[in-house]
Amino acid sequence: MALVVQKYGGSSVANVKRIKNVARRIVKTRRKGHHMVVVVSALGDTTDDLLKIAKAVTDKPSEREMDMLLATGEQVSVALLAMAIQKLGEKAISFTGPQVGIITDRSHTKARILNINAERIRAALREGNIVIVAGFQGKTVGEEITTLGRGGSDLTAVALAKAVSADRCEIYTDVDGIYTADPRIVPDAQKLDRISYDEILELASLGAQVMQPRSIEVGKKFNIPIHVCSSLREVSGTLIAKESQKMEDVLVSGVALNENEAKITIFKVPDRPGTAAKIFKELADSNINVDMIIQNKTETNSTDISFTVFKNELTRAMESVKQVAEKVGAKKVLCDEHIAKVSVVGIGMRSHSGVASKMFDVLAKNKVNIEMISTSEIKISCIVHSNKGKIAARAIHKAFGLGRK
Ligand code: ASP
Ligand code: MG
Image 1 (spheres, rainbow, N blue to C red):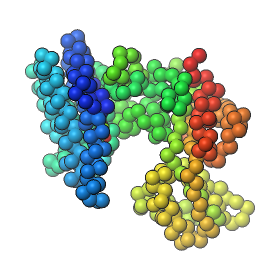
Image 2: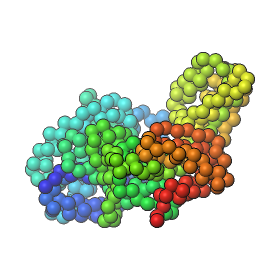
Image 3: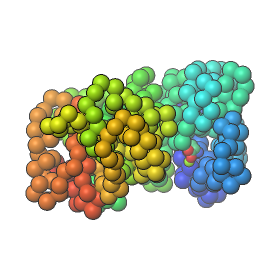
């Protein structure tokens, strides 16, 4: 008999049929004798729809009211799921995040969990209930409702698994697990049996969104193995866990393609201490996320700085950059939306050399020009022209032997 935490995402409970399907799966596990805590997201696109309504009411909704609004989505799904389980003859009770003592800081819309007092969940379990908890929400010490950032139900699940010392944490979603690449782009991508916390964190930040990155950070911190599996099909999923020797022997675990970034280049920036600080402070103050940054000193007394930003923030980024470029005496600013970022990720890179040269060689053989390169301990990313992104991802995936044999 185990204590299992399961999480079902919005698409897994998008309609009545799916809610009933999820209820049946839960009851099946329960009837094997396990105790269960189930975390659910809002039905289907509810959160997006609520955001749209708020934006239609005002272009600057206050963050406190935003949380009041968004938290309603999950309250609907927990109640419906509890009803569906009761209908199948099992005891179930639903709770909101605040009701089960999920205490967060006060950063509305992206709050961090500070503490969970799991006593109420434990009591409900002792009474024989399947406990259904609303994902994505909590409250401050001052009783204000908060939400945990988009995709935050994953975080609720992993944090609850820690709080109740669960034996298993299972994340159910509409994909079968984590793949070596996005199967829509690389048709012969394969499902991974296992991946390390660090690799999935890199893949998530590279745009291969399977789980909310912060939930993985919490999993890593407390060493909670996370099983990602399909809520629709009975297939084994992917285990996210601490790295093992066997994982290190694999050079590359996955290839990611990100087509949502644009490149900005500032030419002839005077080569003086403090210039980069000024430029990036301006961007940070405007709340613009900057990804890859490359600076190169040219022969003259100036440097060229290139970096990437999200395409949907490009207009705002260009406004800020143009202003600050003029202030620091740079020559000109140009942007390019026609870029794609291809990356390879693998903890094997820590102990093996030659991954970068192989990747560059594959790109060369496929006549793909590299515009920018950046690396970390377990990742190599190249910016290429947008019309070469998919070709590059497929070629690299094949060259590292990730496709179906
Ligand atoms: N409903 C929230 C969202 O769509 C939380 C979640 O799905 O995990 O972001
Ligand atoms: Mg959702």
